[in-house]
Image (cartoon, rainbow, N blue to C red):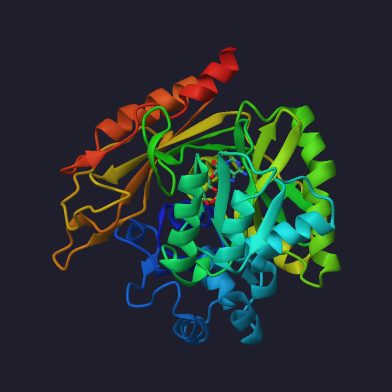
Amino acid sequence: MNLLVVGGGGREHAIIKKLRENSTVETIYALPGNGGIAADAVCVPEIGAKDIDKIVDFAISHAVDFAVVAPDDPLALGCVDRLHKAGIPCFGPDAKAARIEASKVFSKNLMKKYGIPTARYEVFDDPGAALDYLRGPGVSFPIVVKADGLALGKGVLIPQSLREAELSVRAIMEEGAFGDSGSRIVIEEFLTGPEVSVLAFTDGRSIAPMVSSMDHKRAGDGDTGLNTGGMGTVAPNPCYTPEIAAECMETIFLPTLAAMRSEGCPFKGCLYFGLMLTPEGPRVIEYNCRFGDPETQVVLPLLRTDLLSIMQAVENETLGDLNVEWSDGAAACVILASGGYPEQYKKGIPITLPERLPPNVTLYHAGDKLTEDGRLVTSGGRVLGVTASASTLKEALEDAYEAAGAVKFAGRYLRTDIGKRALAALEG
Ligand code: AMP
Ligand code: GLY
């Protein structure tokens, strides 16, 4: 089979490595791919993940048998709709279903209409009305202000006071801090509790939740500093007990699938539930219409069942016939970022990789490229994810950090406390 994967980050690298395990796979094309993915797939750097016309033309001209659309932008732009129209089977939701991530207003209204537990909220498309609301009775701080549309995972502000909240509304709605994504906003109640990421395969009716995971979104140790795309992950998430998993299935996962069917947009693909385990029970913080990054880098290494077979079952709506199995172990991923990320950082810095890695360690390349003379250099903020799998989380973390130490590039930055809270939860 010839496969095509849209995207070019660590998540796509993890998907590609897993797809490679299927012996019927001949060629995998990555559009655009990256420097490290080039060792596992045929990369096409000229075609970006948002170039929908070119992606469809490429899939047709290269006789692609199955496509995987991984990032949110092409999903929201209807890449899956277009590939389907061209007769190419694929994994990922169509544009209508992708609204569950692409519009926070859509997802909040969906949860309200179908009684799915989430933070209480109001929607505003006029900054004056938003400011009046913030100054009104019954509003307490901190509060959460979210841009409606996609904003590279950065469209959420958590002002601590009325003054900060006014500045947040102005920044998003009047100064265009997140571009057009912020012409409508959601203002919602601030919730507290451990956060859990649950990715799930679903064909619209059946759902197979993956091993749970924990992201570390802030740039600095101790969850300080700016929000990033994610500085590291561990799986499974020790806060997510079997009892909580059963409750989430009843109150969140199955109701979400049913809600999407009722709205005429059944969700097929990987549905990401960003959950907060509040004292009142699990609440949905956000949905994503795709695999998480860097959650995928710790979840897929624990998958025992063939990934391509699962993806085909999702496409064919036969997921219910498949037994999706997971290993009992744990995995940890440490992100190596370029100094300055998530703000300004340099690109083009040469990378030195270790000559040998232990068999339980994998490097997922996220932001690098090959120069014309074949050298590997940085090209993004998050450069590499170093994942280790082991029978315990403690061992996985030790092995991931040891291997991370052997990857060198000038200005390399990493958090030193990935998994610390998870280990404490395991011990506590
Ligand atoms: P999101 O982009 O929706 O994932 O939000 C980014 C981060 O903001 C989440 O991972 C949470 O840590 C935080 N967040 C979002 N919504 C809330 C909320 N209602 N209460 C508390 N924290 C939130
Ligand atoms: N790691 C968070 C996300 O993929 O949105």
